[in-house]
Amino acid sequence: MIFDSRKIREELNMSQQDFANLIGISLSTVNNWDNHKTSVQPMIRPRILAVLKSLGFAKVEFEEYEDAEETVDSTTG
Image 1 (cartoon, rainbow, N blue to C red):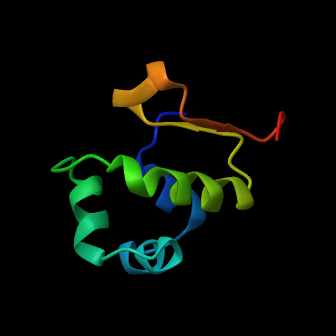
Image 2 (image 1 turned 45 degrees about the vertical axis):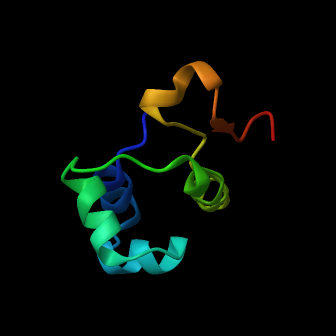
């Protein structure tokens, strides 16, 4: 699954504010991701991946860095 904050939030039934609080970022950052105004900065990606993995998302990739294989796959740990 390519990281899409809006789709992930909808699956989790979370508001932008709830998602921001969960990850530890600002509401405006989530809003920018949802509206494709900015991409996820590399330094925050490990935290997002860890949180999503703990919530049961099997695999999440960040589109612009697919070649770096920055993913989480719950089947391999």
